[in-house]
Amino acid sequence: MNAVDPLAFLLLVVAGAFGAGARYVVDALVQRAWMRTFPLGIFLVNVTGSLLLGVLTGAALALDDTVVAVIGVGFLGAYTTFSTVSVETVLFAERGRWRLAIGNVVGTLLVGVAAAGMGLVIGTVLTA
Image (cartoon, rainbow, N blue to C red; front, side, top):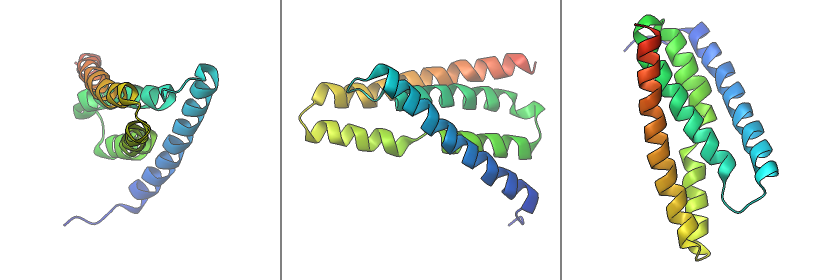
C-alpha cells in the first residue's frame, strides 16, 4: 500500500471544503430563486458536478494524478451529493408525492449520466 502524500491530502481537504461551500451556495441561491417544492438546487449541483467530473476524467491522461484526485475527489466529491438526493426522494415518497420522488431520482440519474458523458467527450477533445 502506498503512503499518503501529506501535501496532496491537505490540498484534497481544502478542495473538499470549497466543494462543500460551493454546493451550499449554489443550492441556496437556486432554491431561493426557484422557491418550489422540487429540489432544483441539488439537482443542478449534481448535474454540473457530473459534467465537470466527466471533463476531468476525459482530461485525466493529460493531468497530474494529484490534480485529478484533488479536483475529482476533493472538490467534486464534496460538491455533489447522492445522499441528499436519496433523502429528498424518500421524504417525497413518505408524503405521498410519488411524481416528485420518481422525477427526482430518475431525473437526477438520467440527466447526470448524460452530463457525465458529455463532459467526458469535452475533456477528451480538450486534451487531444
